[in-house]
Length: 120
Image (cartoon, rainbow, N blue to C red; front, side, top):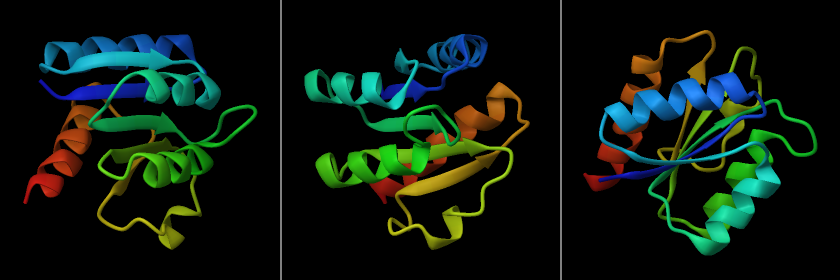
């Protein structure tokens, strides 16, 4: 069962996505901000992270940079309605961008895709 961490400052989005991924067979944890996510990474292991880009305090790009450096096996998916920085991603193949708005099944497919790419 893949382990996923969902990071978003909006409770409704975290809840909706957690439910969709649990139904798809993932073990899911959620965090309301990048700092809480970093604490979870320090105490648990994850196969992937799904994070919003725009959050107070630290953005999703900074979070996935930290994850990529501290936990290189973890794959990342960023969620954003308007992102101009993913084109310069220093982690090609380890990070994908999910454009908002989306339905939960698209998020499940995106995370599944980055995990499958990691296995091949």
